[in-house]
Image (cartoon, rainbow, N blue to C red; front, side, top):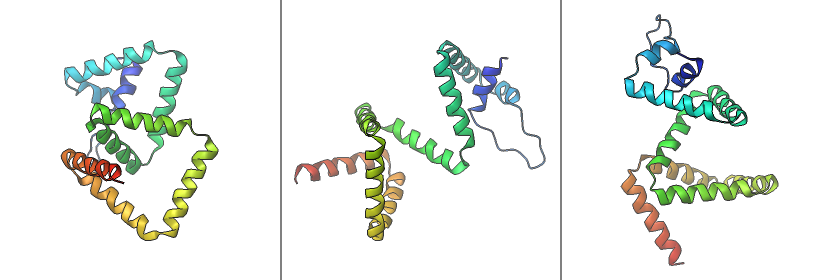
Length: 160
């Protein structure tokens, strides 16, 4: 088994283990995978090896940043990805376009917007709490409930 397959096997997560049991190695975790998952990892490795060196370096840097994240942040990012994957293709495209727009802003403009939001929330702590509560409620909604909420919001915007 190549080192690349082992590295990809690490991405599937580490199962919980008994307090005194030694952590299984990447090779052991890989061997326990079903054949279809093993093949999927091998395909990802082939895809990785076909990338230009600069792209491989970017992927490695991202993996290194991922490993350094606290567990809570990793879980938040996993949840965000799950939410994104549940969106319709049109909604995903809209999110991608908004991200592109934000990335297109200068660093100064992004910093300005960030500061405006922080200042607003600092001036209106009740709004901050309301925003956090709304975010908690949103995360607990089903896809259908979220879609209904989006449609109600679009309707309100049209009626303004």
